[in-house]
Image (cartoon, rainbow, N blue to C red):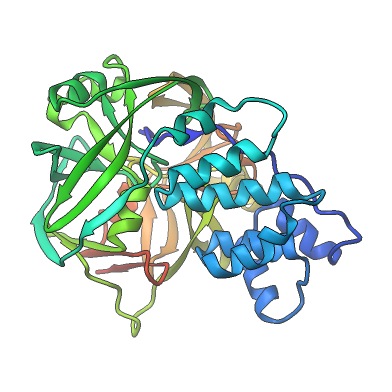
Amino acid sequence: MKFALLLMAVVATQAIAQTSIQQEDAALYERHDWFTLRDRIAAGIARDSLAIGATAVAFDDEAQARLHLEPLLKGKQAAEAHGWLSYMDLRKGHYRAAAAHIAATDPGNPNPLAETFRTLSDQVTAEMVPATIRYRIFQNKLFVPIAVNGMPAELIVDTDANLSFLSETAAKSMGLTIRDSAATTVGALGSASRLRITIADVRIGKAHLRNVAFMVLPDDASLFDTLAPNQQGALGLPVFLALEQVSWDRDGNFRIGAGHDSTRPSSPIGFDGADPIVRFSHQGTVLTGVFDTGAETTDLWQPFATAFAALLKEKGTAGMKQVRGFGGNGQVSEVLVPEIALNYGGVTVRAAPAHVLTARTTANSDWLAGRMGLDLLRQAGRVTIDFRDNRLQLTE
C-alpha cells in the first residue's frame, strides 16, 4: 500500500528550448532522466545552465545547483529555476526558503502552499550521534520507536513521504497545534486533499531534530484503520536526509549513522523533484524508480511495461489492482507476472508476483519505471540507505 504523500507540483516542467542545448539533452530533461544527464555533464557534453542546475538538484549538489540556477531567476526560465530550488530546500526542511521559491514561480498570484511554508520554522538538527535501536515489521510496514514532543510513538519509515505525517488523533494526543491551510496535497492515485500541518520536536535513537513538519491527516484515512494512535503516522524524507545514513538488518537492529560499504555493489540514489529515486535493472536494461520504504509492495509502471511488452504478453495475466491511499481507494489496471527478478541495491531480488500497472497513477509514472517498495528490501539481510553518498546497498 502506498501512503507517502506527494505535494502538488510546484511548477510544471517545460521543455528546454532546442536552441539552448543539444537535442538529446533536452529530451533527457523532459524525461527527468537525471542519471544519464549527470553522465553527460561529467563528460562535458551538456552546457545548458537549467539542465545542469536541475541535475545538481537531483543529486543534492547545492553549490552547483545555485551556481547554475540562481543566474536564471530573473530571466525567461525563472519559474523553472525557482521550482527546482524549492524542491531542494523542501527536502532539507528549509521551509521558508522553499516558500520564497514557490511564490516566485507565479509572482502575480497568491500561492497557498508558499503561504503555509512561510509560517514554519526551519528543521534543525540539534544533535546527531550514531546509535542502534530496535525496529519491527508490523502489518507489512517498518516501524521505529521515536519521541514526538517527548511523547513515545512508533512510526513508519517512509522515504517517499515529502513531509512526515500523523493522524489528527495522534497529533492531538501529542499536544501538537494543528494549522489549517488552503494548500492541497496529492496522493498515490492523484486525488487531492486539503493540507493541515504541525511542527514538532523529534528524537530517534540519540538524534534530536527540531521543527519537524508533519502533515495532519484525517483519522478515517485507510492507513490508520488497524493502528493504535501512537502508530498513526510516518517519518518522511526530510527526517532521513537529516539522519543521512541509516541501516537495518534481519535481526531487528536499526542503525543511525551507518554508511554503505564502498567495496561492495550498490545502487545510486537521486531525487526527482521531491521524490527519492533509485536505479535498478532487469535483464541488463537499466531503469529508474521511486524509492519508497513506505510502500508495502512494489509496483512497476508503464515505462517498464513498454520496455518488456513481450514478457508481459508471454507470462502476464491482465487484471485490476486495489490501490489504497490517504486520498482514497481505487482500482488500477495491471498485468500480473508470477515473478520478475531485479538487480537492486547490489543484489538480485524478486517481485513475486510482480504487479505491472498499465494505467497512469501519479504524474511521475509517465517517466519512471516503478515504485520500489519494502517487499524488495525485506529480501536482504541488511539494507543501508546512505544519503551522504547517495547509495542504496542490500547485502544477503
